[in-house]
Length: 371
Length: 134
Image (tube, rainbow over all chains, first blue to last red):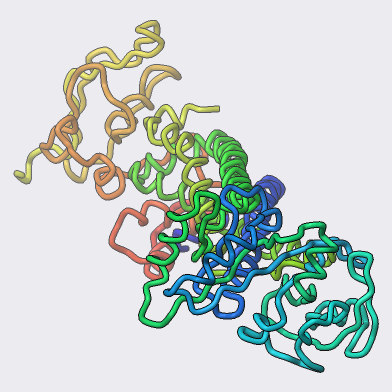
């Protein structure tokens, strides 16, 4: 009989308690995994937005509650575009409207010349013709959702557009939306002379970081974003989700640890006499510690695997909601698996500390006398 | 260690329980020579089990000394090694691990030896078992 067989035997002895403990911990880990997958998906969406069209960074309003609420004036945009170290600066107005069952349809206003300069992949039709305020390009996801293709007419934000092209930018949020002429979108959004952000590409041999720093220094109203970690400057939602993720992880650890501690204390209490026998036949305190810790770790490892599986199922469930799938794709990263295992490990150790101390403090006779 | 030296020598052993209310041993002496079979008899509660528990290092005496092969148990640094390698005790009650088979119960003390899992099992089967467990 191996040591691990003894550990498994001890866990199997109390099947119901073991299963309930595993279930309790795995629910916590499921939450951590699901939230992690969604957060990673959101970050990927933000990253796709950030690098759309090959820009080096985005200029947006400093301290905006949400990126879509950011306002940058056309004067600020033109000042950036006029810089010698900037190759191009494309202003975009993101007008988020409900279209069909998608409440987050991004109708993006761009200047047709700008779109041609940094274009998404064209799947059908043509790019936006200059000066045609009724033309629209649909993302491939939006085209499928609206069952509309080149030549069809669609109603977006209460206005009729005819579809001139279908594109695939590779970014979930953009592909669920559409491009139209900036002037038309500004009119529909009642934001004349305003863009949400300016996508900036600097000239070759120029350091984008220095340009970004200079733009921020010149205007106290805007900030630049070149990495996802900086997105919190213009989107408090990203910060809130990160904070919620951390809080739920801490809660999962706390609740899980109490569950494991309860199980292990019960187990050690019931087996006090057996621990006495083990001590009487020469088992060292260290081996007793190993026995209890291994039981706790195995319990939590199984819970982590179950939690990861349930997390995938839960995420797929969440992704069936069109509102969510319209702007993010789930991302299953190694980091999420590691986080789940880390939570399980911390729960196992935290839950086993007190039972271990109690078991080791007992002398063989104290344990043997226990009824 | 001389050939004539006692295997076990107990000198002036005392042990009390419940804050001295129960005096289990009051200056017990015992000498067991190598190869000798000894039976300790007495009425219930006279301290037979307490004496054996102290010799097996399962408990600590209040005073007195237990020598095994001329070594004072009080000076042993590793009583676990002593319990697993040098002494064996069969309890009055059936102190077995109920989730394990008889053979696995026999293997339990071998965890503290150099024997691996594969070696423990055949050794447990080969051990002479008076009143063999089933």
